[in-house]
Image (cartoon, rainbow, N blue to C red; front, top):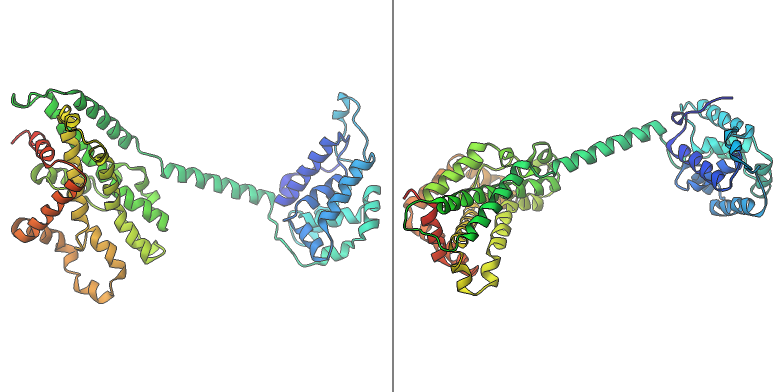
Length: 434
């Protein structure tokens, strides 16, 4: 007796055989018959056999109902009567002949695997008594089924299994790409621990030199700033990935790992140094985004806006207590903690406003860039290399520009109900070396 393997059949044909076995089991049949197989083939309504039958004008749903009625109305098989029966042959001789014939049909057509159409043709060419009775109703011509146009191109079971394996690997890779970095989780855990400590310090002795509370505030604000930098770059990367740039996942940008965003010196160290020296939220080096892979100009603008958007969301969450609680004593009783939070909010606002300046190299220009003509890009080409230095120069030497920027910062702070005095206290404690 010939043995059969899944790779000899299409994926749909394997499912048909599995369903044939399932209905035989439910019927407590001693052997798997051609009628069980025909039922399994017809159940595959999206496979080639059912499609061909519908194309020839047959009602496959009615065919299925009739087969079910045959199973329900009278005994079509031998019944198992004991445990020993399970050791007997599961495929009856007629079905063995049908399966061999299906493989021959496939080979005659130049295929290495049999489809549901081949199973149907072979069933019609090698009918069991039950199939013969069923054919008396439907009068299906095997040659007509064999020669009908293909309705569904079935694939080999091995190919389907390989496609499922590749899809599963891609899904695992996608989940891994979005996995939060342990480094980021460690930073957040440290931030939470320091925040808890600062909140417990209700009566700080600020006039007795540098102590543990002041050092804790310094580390808390610095780590909070690094976390916000990671969120900023993650915002760019996440929108780029959604917009079509798959390299964002390959580069590890979706993990929130601060070390993955461009260069640690430019993205993390330099912004922290500017924080220490000037108290401004300087943007770090941006993630690399393949704008050519982004599917629309609107999405390109969204990618650029997502970084400042992440800062804005972070600032809004930090400012929520100030907006909801009007009790001054609540904040005064934990002055170190709320001064640190106020300073972090201040830094987020400076980072947002700085980034939104429409200067080449900053996100504000990135939002506009997709909509500017090539002539404008050519005119602004020199600023791509020196625009950032020009901006720093304007901050230091153009009083009107600097005054407007800082006025806007303080107005936004007041809008969030954050006291400027808290920010000043936070700065004085943060810069403990001053």
